[in-house]
Length: 309
Ligand code: B12
Image (cartoon, rainbow, N blue to C red; front, side, top):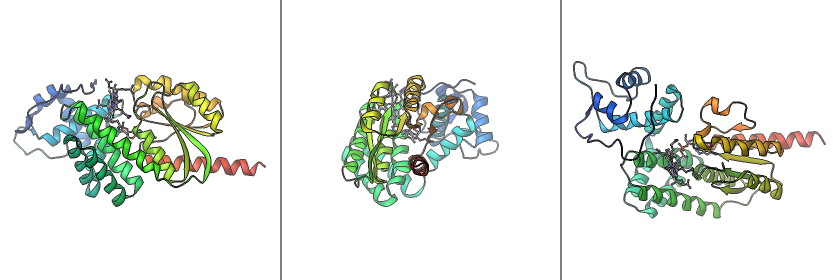
């Protein structure tokens, strides 16, 4: 089955009265049998149909189908996509409320309110959950809203910049590192999506790790220069777009050949196939888990080095 990703504004529809399956199929570009199988097999959308009545999809149900379509278009198998969609939609309690407030603040074009909500999330949930359960899902939702015409590009940029500035402010008051040797963090040479990378660096810094963030579109030689200049022995490469993966892999391989511990993440690497024969460690989709994986591997490397002396 072929599912095409969202094109900005292409699938806007009046959803208020509920939408028939044929219309959902046309608007999302997903065949009706596929929609039926998502509901039957994966419970997406979750609500049950009333017997004897024609199915009408509510705005929330249409939203969950859009998310499902977009996850599959990124190359995710359907069962994994369904888990991701449930995770995105199922956020409950304080995280869900904070995400809603951030989205509202973005649609009001109010960067200070976006940052205030992130600060509340940090206070209420702690840093790791603030990043994994609020900041990242909020950014994903902003992207879905943009792709489906629910918010415009200015509001998307405002949310992005408010978020990045908030991470930077937090970084300024991070505790001093326990060891000055930094971890080098870079996007692949074609990648502009830095937020996951910057959020991971913030988490690592609060774990008292030194970080050198090289940022967007980092060329391969720049990664090698940074490794050499800072005597770093670990590097994180992030890539989000499948058409940027080949170049990100060049960075991964070059850092591996230079002897660094290599970690990588991002949507370009979500499928097992995209990770086949790659050196290094895939960090998964959650920053807290990623930060633990990095710390564990750095610790075992130090322990091994100490043992060989
Ligand atoms: C902000 C944003 C931008 C900003 C980035 C600014 C910046 N400094 O980061 C700008 C405006 C530059 C931009 C540009 C583009 N973007 Co953009 N962008 C986004 C947006 C809204 C948020 C990105 C983000 O930070 N998401 C939060 C991350 C963290 O979520 P995620 O990507 O789903 O990541 C998951 C995992 O991979 C993991 N993860 C992600 N990062 C990391 C890092 C680590 C270390 C770890 C462990 C895990 C991890 O966590 C997430 C949870 O599962 C997304 C929407 C979305 N759904 O994400 C679109 C999105 C990623 N962009 C998209 C596109 C198409 C583009 C452009 C091609 C648009 C264009 N036509 O120019 C360009 C590409 C530029 C390039 N060469 O890279 C598409 C990608 C579609 C696809 N094929 O996958 C998205 C999904 C929007 C959409 N719905 O269509 N974008």
